[in-house]
Image 1 (tube, helix red, strand yellow):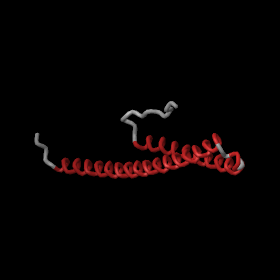
Image 2 (spheres, one colour):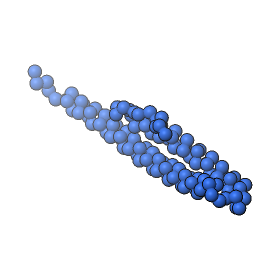
Image 3 (cartoon, helix red, strand yellow):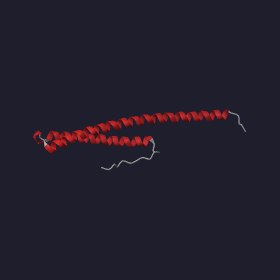
Image 4 (spheres, helix red, strand yellow):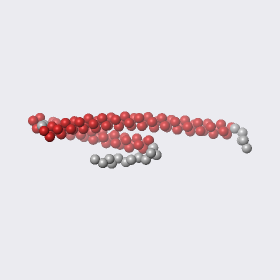
Length: 115
C-alpha cells in the first residue's frame, strides 16, 4: 500500500500542517464510522451458524481494524491538540518579540547620535 500523503518541506508553517492533519483526522473518523456501520450490519445480518471459518476470521479482523482506526484517530487528535498549543505559544512569542523590538527601537531613538 503506497503512502499518498504529501511530504511537506521543513519551511512549511505549522498552521498548514495542522490544517492537513485536521483533514486527515476528519477522513479517518469518517472511515471509522463507515467501517463500524458495515461491521455492525454484517454481524447482524450474517447468521451465527455462518460466522465460521473465513467469515469468522473476516469479522475478527474487522473488529481489530476498527480498534486500530479508533486508536489512530485518537492519536491524531492528540497530535493536533499539541500543534494548536504550539501555534498559540509561537504567536505569543512572536508578539512579544515584536513588542521588544519596538521598545528597543524606541530606546535607541532616545540615545544621542555617536557620530
